[in-house]
Picture 1 (cartoon, rainbow, N blue to C red):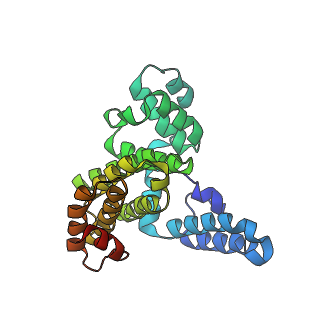
Picture 2: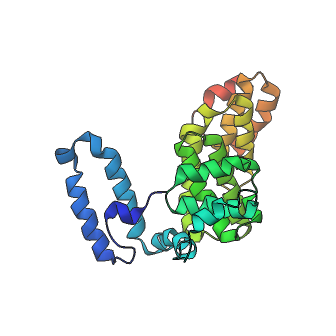
Picture 3: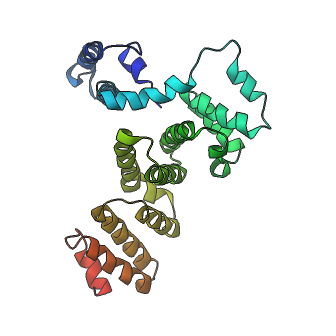
Length: 258
């Protein structure tokens, strides 16, 4: 998780005007005419930080995790948690603590040692802390090309948000991130059978009919390549019901005779 305040070199209580001024100054130095193309990634991060911190609702969501969890204490909280390696509650809190203090590799190592996807952190963290922790963890796993694990965590969050809203304004960003992960990175990281299961998972999360139609088309394409035309045909028919104008479907429709 990027520290947006550090990227902009402003304090956490900076005003909107201070944030705008800091963005303009840094953006000037990162302009391609000055810094060249090598600064494109830094500029992208700077713009993301500015967009979040200059928007009242998005800034509130971003600050929330830090405000609840990062506190001044009279002892070394990290060491105290690390010493309790056999206590899953302490280890779940350590994962969250490390993530919030930008020690992402350490957080993932703790998570892996405790079972990774089988580590039920929701049993040991408050619901809000757990949801924040899972989102940050998914981001970091995705950065390390552990896309399937990131996908499972993000779909878990969306399902929980549907059940009982917590992220509210921020859920749009999470949903967009999940769809980007699926569109750009996930397929190349999983086998065909797992990809079909991932698409099935997405269908139960309450996305738009248009989104579901695209995912069902991908399911049908994959099943056809796997030699399962009988399984692909009804899925493609259902995709066209959801979106009769589904793009790039003509060739598949001919093969399946739908």
